[in-house]
Every structure is written in C-alpha cells, then in structure tokens.
Length: 564
View 1 (cartoon, helix red, strand yellow):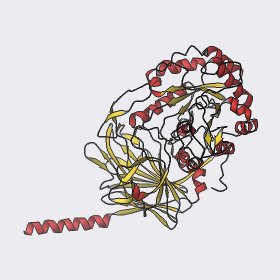
View 2 (cartoon, helix red, strand yellow):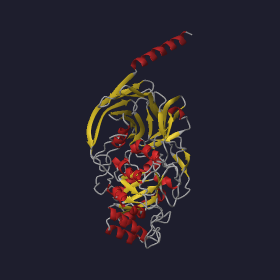
View 3 (tube, rainbow, N blue to C red):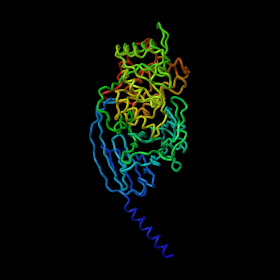
View 4 (cartoon, rainbow, N blue to C red):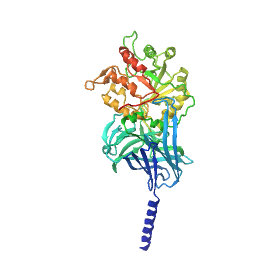
C-alpha cells in the first residue's frame, strides 16, 4: 500500500513539474494585427487571434511515422529560431502584380527527434509546416491538422463524395456544426467568422505528399480536421482517362527523410476584397526551379470543345478537320490571340503518336506559324504517362508551345508526383502546361511558371449538361477557389439566358446571365492562359464584345480591389 502511495505521489510531482515546464511561444505579424500562440505540453497546439477576435482555440498538430514515432507529441524543444523577412518576389508570370512583397515573421521550433515545426505570421494570414531531418526514407502513417474555431461559424463548403474527383463543386454555405464525420470537402474552404474576418483554409508547396481535405470532428462541432487520401496500392484502368483507386494503403506517404512538408495555411481577410488581393499561396510556394523562362508566354486561346466546333457561314463542313482549325487560326490571328487549342478528337484515343486522318498536322502547323498563332494540344493524362518521352519529343519536333493534360481526378502522393513530372518534362521542351481534371493550385506556378493555369473548378463547361453554373456561383468562386491560384474556368459565352429560362444543350451551349457578365469574367477571373470558349462565328456576331475580350490582359502589373 505504501508503495502505491509513493508511486502516486511521484506521478503527481512529475505532472506538476511538466505543467511547470510547459511553454508558450508567441509570433506576431508585421502589422501586429495577427497573433499566433504555440503551446508546448503533452501535445503541440497553436491558437490564432486577429486583432481582438480569437479565431482558433488551441488546435493540435501532429504527424505519426512508422516505428511509433510521433512528431508533436510530448515535444522537447531544443531551440527556437526567429527571423523577420522583408523581401520581394519578381514572378515570372505576373498574374496579380509585377512585384510581390514577401513580408513575414517566422518562428522555427526545433525539437528533439529530428524534426522542427515552422510558423509564419503574415499581415494576411498564418502558415505552419513540419520539417524532418531523418537520414533515411520515412513512412508517414498519419497527420493531425486541426482548425478549432471558437464558434459555429458559416463556411463555404465544396463538398465531395469521395477522393476520386475533378474537384469541380459548388460551394454550399452551411454551418461548421453541419459537417459531421463522413462529410468532406476539398480545399480551399472559406469560413465566415461571426463579427470577424473571413478565413480561407488551404495549403501550399504540395510535393511528394497527398493533398489536404477537410472533415468534421466528432468531439467538437466547431473544429475542422485535415483529411488525406492514403497511398494507392491498386487502381483500375477503366478507360484512357479514368483510373480510380480500388485499394489504399494504411499510410499517407513514403518519402525522403530530410524534407519540408506542405504548408497548412489560414488566409485572414478583414474585407472580402482582401481575399482577392492576396497571393499568400504563391508566396508559400517553393522558389523558381527553372533557369530559362523567357519562352513562357501567357495569352488567350480560341477553344474548340465547348462550342462543339459550331462554325457556320463558311464554305467547308465544320468538324475535326484541317479546314475548321485553319478557321480558328484565322480568328485568333484577326483578334491577336496567341493560341488555339486542339481538344479531344485530334488523335485516336490511346495513341498520342498518331493523328486522325481528317487533320493534316504538318500543314496545320505550317499555317499557324505563318499566322503567328501557337497550337496547344489536349491529351488524357494516362495516355501521356504511357507515351511520355516519345510523345513530348514529337510535340517538341512539331513546335507545340503547350499541352492541356486532363482527367487526373486524384491528389494522392503518386498523382501529386505526376504533376511535377509533367511540369519538369514539359519545361525541358519549352511547353506550357494547363492541368484539367485537376486538384487546386498550391503555389506550383511559382516553382514551375510553365504550369500556367489549371482547372479544379466548376467552370462553364458544366453549362453543357447542368444548370449549376449560375451568376451567383461565378461570383462565389472569386472569393473561394480563385484565391488558391489560376483558374481555367473557360468563360466567353456569347449566347446567354436568364436563370429561369436556362436549359442546358450539350451541342449548342449557352450560359446563364448576360454577355456583359461573360466579359467581366475576363477582368476578374485570374488565368494567365485564358480561353475564349465560344465559336468564332458567334464572336464575329458581336465584334465589340470580342474586341473587349481580346484586348483585356491576362496578367497585371497591379491588382487593387476597390470594393467587393
């Protein structure tokens, strides 16, 4: 009995000692309005405050590795390193601005066990990431990333049924408490703090690791938890494009032991317009990885697929053929558009090394060069992967300036690495990349500026088969998905209807709203490679609208939101 009492007494002393030695570290943004508090006790946690408003209660951070290694659990701090950064980034493609001020306060908490956690406080947000220093490769079993809000706020929630997704959803406005376990969304997601700022949750510098999703917490209805697709063990090839995962591992990633993991970020906006002005995701992207970038040219594209090649008033039969694409080239040259695109149909599905007999590719490319118009080629991601080197070498021989890669529909570790592979291989051959069927941007356009835009958005193509793409939806995207980075929404419909009268017609597409609404999207929607989705014949009917669209830049020296 006396041994039990002594043991209990020792435990109480140890507990008291631990609570005595529990530490708190504070980080404040350059303008002093955002504050991060980091608590070091049995579990590493962080809290965030904006001015007088508490945004996050202490929220746990942890990562579990194979071998019973728990980063962030009972951390023992070796050193805390602080620095102030006042730098400027000159982006290769000046999407929002020609010069980006990169000002932040940084705190690195170095812990025993070969890892650190880095926190940054910007004037427009907060970010943190793990850094590991293990000599060998590691297996990441799980990551705990929590966002414990202080009340049941509203959230713009792009809900997804499962991990096999184009990430093309409408943003539902619901309460945090409605996100029960089992409901999930992709990021970015936008939280509307009651009597406080807007808070956008996303990630940056995603590399060799799965993407961040969000779900509810069964123990706290105001908490969002990070959710990650686990490694693919087995997939099923159901077509030239659809490769769903049918068996997943019990871990997130096997990766190098010395590395930085993706940033988890909270973009904090006092005014709604501050969301649009922010380029926080870009700033948190990895630095430029290319030496030669002079060949990267933004611009506009005359697109064939959405308008179903509905060219009329011409002396040839419109379709996937040389004459029709020469007509698109003539239209592009007339209005000073830099590119046209050959979407699905130019090659026999499954073989990028062949061209359908209706297209004389050498003649078409000769004609395009004579008109100073580049030809971008669409392709399925799987076919490109299967024929990567010979296909890209052939395109380089043809002088193709860019590729549109489609239908990835995943962001597990393998697929994230596929994006980097394509970015690197395309850059070697001086080719732009437009990712469709894609996950959201995570700052890759800073590292590989040839990845000039991507989809991962419920864009105007959906108007061919649904009524979901409303003017309200378009407006919501500006404050949600677009904040992550370039957004290939593909605007430009010249045939329009009211929401009440609208009915989708696949082969004769039109949009909801007005032509002025479509024109405005070229000013507001950010995409350094911007599509003109309608038919040249329809654009010729409204030359004033077309001239406005053609003359509107796709990149800007400065972005200021007057009101939003």
